Length: 409
Image 1: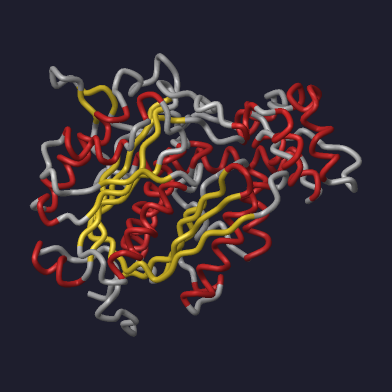
Image 2: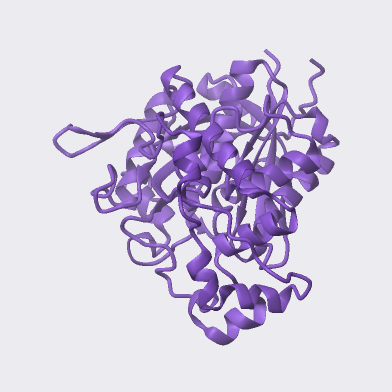
C-alpha cells in the first residue's frame, strides 16, 4: 500500500457511539436527555483514549433539531457539564441529516489547515424528546415558503425518485429485507461491539446496549404486506406540489413503506480527529486518514440525491473513482435512493452497506453521519480494504460525504 498521507493530514483517531434507540416514549433511550447522551460519550472517549481534555481545541456537534433540549449550542454546554476545561470552545452545526458528516469534515479541515491539533466531532439527536420539525422553521410551517421552494416531505421525495427510476415495489422490499438481515448478522457477529457504549441509568442499570430497531426475523412476505407509507400524505397536496415543480411527472407511485424507510432513532456519536503528532502523544494508532470531503445540493423535490453527488465530488477531490472504494456506508434515506446510487456508481452488494443501514438500525439525524464514519473505518479494518466513503442526504436537497483511507501499518 502506497502511503498517500502527508504531514498536514487529518486522521480519525477514535470514535464511540451510543446504541440507537427507538424514537418513541417507550424507546430505550427516551429517558436520557441529548445532553446526557453527549456527556457520557465525552467521558467514554477520554477514558478509552487516555485523552487529556485540556488538549482538545474544539468540540463540534451536528444536530438537526436545535430547539428545546437540543438548543443553546449543545456542544458548549456538554463540555461544561462534563467538567472539561472552560477554555474548550464548542459549536453546534446544522445541515439537517448530514450534520454529523459536516462536523467530522469541519474538524478535519481545522486540523489539516493547522488551526487545531485535536478536535472532538460528532452529533446527537433525540427525536423522542425533540420531535422532527419541532423547531417550526419556515421550511416546515410557512405555506408560501414551502410552495416556493417545493419543500415536500422526505417520503414524497423518495417516491418521486422511485417513480422516475421506474422502480417496482418488489425491488424496494427486497432491499429492505436485505438491510435487516445484514444488520442482524453484524450484531450477532459482534461487528459493532468495539464502538458502541451501552447507556446506563443513574443507578447503573443498562438502558440499552444494542440498536433497537433491528428486526432479525423480518421477511420479504412481511414487508410486501405493508401499506404504502406516504400515499395519504401525497393526497393532501404534497403530490401536487411535487408535480408543480416537476411538470413532466404525470403521477407519483407511492412505493415506500415503513419497511423501506429509515427508522427514526435516538443516538449520539463522537469521533476524535487529530494530526500525526497528536496521535503519537496519545499513543494512538490512527484508524483512518480523512482523505477528502464534500457537500452538495440538489433541488428540494428530489432532495435525497445530494448525498450521491457529494460522494462523487469527494472522490474527485481525493483523486479517486467509484471503483476504488472498498467500503460504502450510505445513509439509507429510503430504499430507492440506495438502489439509485448502486446503479449509477456500480456499487455492488459486496461493498455497499454490508453491515446493514439506517432502514434497519435507525436514523438519528444529527448523529448518523458520525456513526457512518466510525462504521466505515471499522469495516475497512475488518475487511482489509483501503478506501471507503460515508455519506448522508438530508432535507432541502443537501448532502455531505467524506472519503477515508485505511492507514498503512
